[in-house]
Length: 109
Image 1 (cartoon, rainbow, N blue to C red):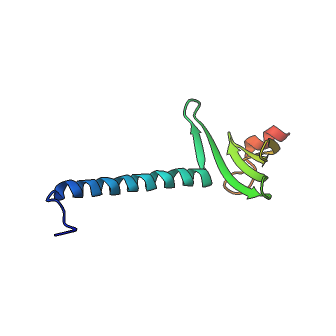
Image 2: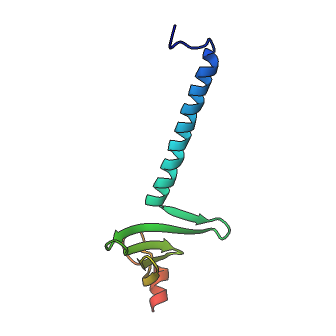
Image 3: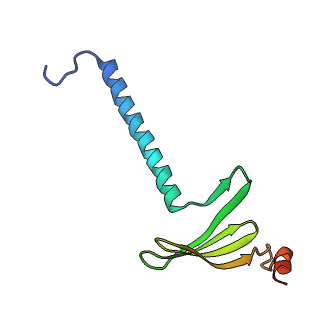
């Protein structure tokens, strides 16, 4: 009969499962890299134990952004363009009640 297998069904099924497995791994890797690019979240410098948190990003057109980053108990307002990153503001981290932390007050006195 035409269209039938040569009797080697096991080899055919193994190939199909390998192809399906490769496709699933490819999709998972692409998803991981795309999500990291779109939503970077936080990064950890393991050598120094330093944490940097991306708090908010605002697009200002095709090539400009305002970015709010928290690092070392400071909140940084950055202006980001295609070729530059400029520090626009440097503020102390607010405590959970919404007030400025005591360390931040001492920095500005």
